[in-house]
Image 1: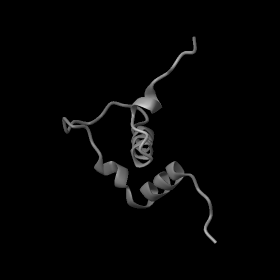
Image 2: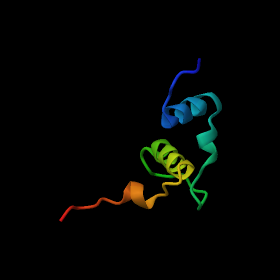
Image 3: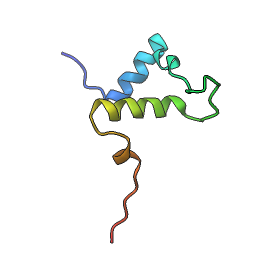
Image 4: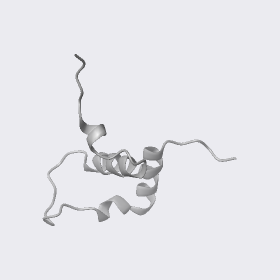
Length: 64
């Protein structure tokens, strides 16, 4: 029987084995100054894999 695991946790686990997130870089090919880049990359991969896109996951809506 397989264990249930959240997709972000699985991506971080695979990264710890392979370092695949290190293959992503800034388009300018310079070193990024962004804190938490790995977390942002995993969030992007999860959003795109579930066809959520970036807008719903980044927009804060206010109720009127």
